[in-house]
Amino acid sequence: MRLQAAWKRIPEWGKAFLLAIVILMAVHVLVLRWVTVRSASMYATLLPGDLVGVERWPLWTGMGRSDIIVFHDPVEDDRPMGQRQLLVKRIAGLPGDEVELRDGELLVNGRRQPAPAQATALWTVRLKAGETATGVLQQLGLPSDFLTGGRTLIDLPLNAALAEQLRKRADVASVSKRELAGGTPAHIFPFSPNFRWNNDDYGPLRVPGKGDTVAITAFTLPVYDRIISRYEHNVVEVSGGDLLINGREATRYVIKQDYYFVLGDSRESSSDSRYWGFVPADHVVGRAGFVLLNARAARGQTESRSFIGL
Image 1 (cartoon, one colour):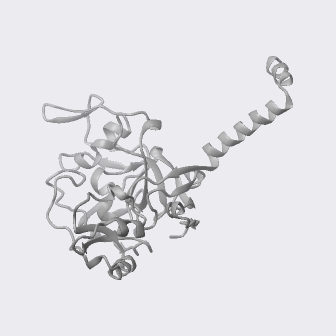
Image 2 (cartoon, helix red, strand yellow):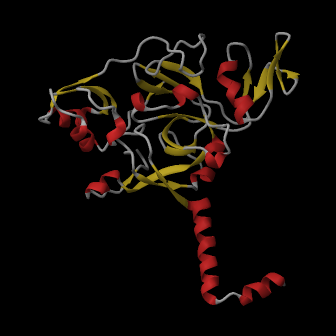
């Protein structure tokens, strides 16, 4: 009754304003929100500065392999969820998928996956003497601080079409594709000498899903440690040579939620699942559906693009 009385005392313009706020909040939570791309990890599918429409309903209806998703940074787990950086990557592996990279090509469940249409690799661009990278970066839609100044030999994320465009520039001497990665660097997930992988030769690695029962051994613990201790909030410790989860000896663990394996379309410029592991389902904000405002709009070139079906 008090609420009804208070509502009647609000003028009509005030009621309209409050209803508009409620509708906007509902749209933000359930339907759509906007995110600005901050990095070059999805170049050239997405450019730094692009304003992207993020569809919220796939959180309930489900997402598919190759969807571009927006999620809270899983590594920033020392901060509340709302204070973490938002990242944009493409789903390479769904819960239950086996993901592998061989010579830079993605295989899922043993089948080669076509590269995204705009996907890039790392190319070395040699500038002519006395030239700077300013014009090249402007043409590619990359920010001016993407490279440190004063160099004539620069590495850039390009595909064959972009490389050909740069070859035609008067300030460019040559453009050549970089070789594939080698060795077994220590910064590759799951950070164990038992997994001798690099960013071009990686896996196979199974993406965990809700309800999976996984064996916990000295060999597999690096894969699941962060899931158990950080994302699913258990206490993991070793006592007398035994692994304890919440104070009890454990050789198996049941996964509590779904996870995703994500990659950037510009893989040599992307910090993704190869470097820090899986994306928990409860970190996902939604699916990137379209670009509302392209970064090139600052130069008078507006563009609207949809990613559904890429």
